[in-house]
Amino acid sequence: MTRETAYQMLTKYLKNDKLLKHSLAVEAVMQHLATRLNSDPMEWGITGLLHDADYDRTKGRPELHGKELFKLEPNSIPTNVEHAILAHNSEFTKTQPTTALDWALICCDELTLIVMKIASSSKSQTLAGITPTDILEKLRQKNFAKEAHKENIYQCETKLTIPLTEFVTICYTAMTQIHEQLGL
Image (tube, rainbow, N blue to C red; front, side, top):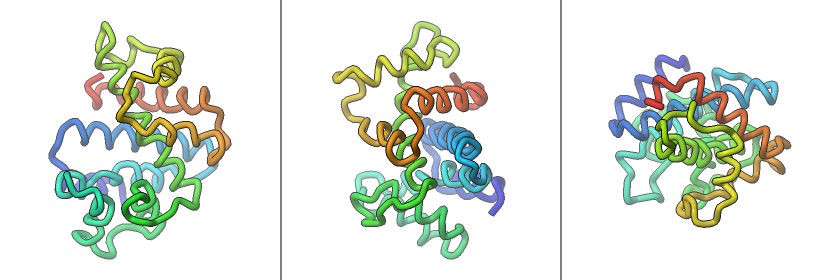
């Protein structure tokens, strides 16, 4: 699967602009993580790009999220990418994360949302207006982004053997490189 094919698939099913930007952010972070973990940046990027492609169609039905895309696009997505997408919603799909690809997606999914929230609420409303230190400080605040599954982010240390500070820096760096696409 090429990046172009994956992007066309994403935009065919996902129309929510905020989620499209989130998908682009996760793609960028996954590519950086792949490089850091000596894996395939293209494969990991496509995984990040497609992980929420069925979200508009499954909103309010979390038990279908991660499954619907594969019904819509049978045999189109590589097996390991499919597994990672299913594993990122394991509570409902019952697909357990087992690989670094799976865990990278789980760990960075919530973090990209948090970074976008911090940047958009900063004085400049840009990524340039915040630092990885700001992100770490916000992560440690119990009342900030209470709805987020922060425990998923912290698993970067045990599942990927990447210290949290480095993981946050990787995420921030990846997102700043595409800040224009993210509107940040």
